[in-house]
Length: 238
Image 1 (cartoon, rainbow, N blue to C red):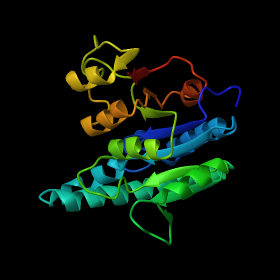
Image 2: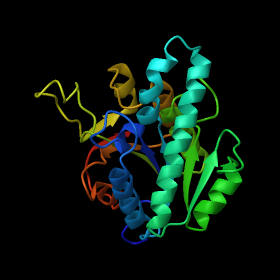
Image 3: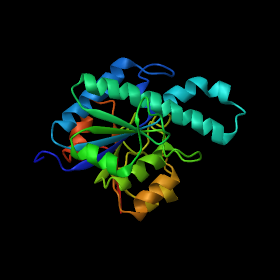
Image 4: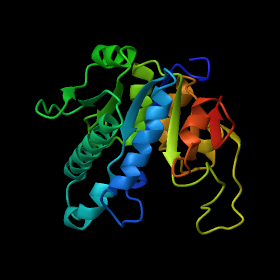
């Protein structure tokens, strides 16, 4: 543990982080690379939980979902996160990491139901816990699920892996002069409408003083650098 700045971490991954070069779906090489990075972190003795989105799967069925009731569409998205969770579990266990999937929607054949004390016990035993199906409720994003689960398991920090280097004042893909922030206050993220996490998730973190680091998960070794306390990406705090 001497090498790690944090004891217990919640890693938030977007579903898009698993797409690689595809328009939607899962690229197994990308999942394997993420699993290898997580294995390096676990080897330090860090207790790690993961919340993963479902945008990569839901994007593929979004055409069929047009006109759906919002709640029904959200449940489809929750099921997409379960698919991603199982893929990541498989890749992690091939890397020698013991893993448990805990689902907010009960699916006994493929994962355990979410129980807070059980999740904490798994973490204490050195297992990676993957939280699937968001909060189990429509109208809440997986960002909100990440904030909620991080507080429930008493995580030291949320680290959010994205496709860019951190939080910018505008979209770096379309704005070459976009400014990268090193550090931000929660209230500035809310006030300026910066698209890092939804307002409910940011407000939950602000109310409970839970810091967030946003970084580029696609660059090899970045996850380990964040865990060791290197100043990469953007830190959101009080």
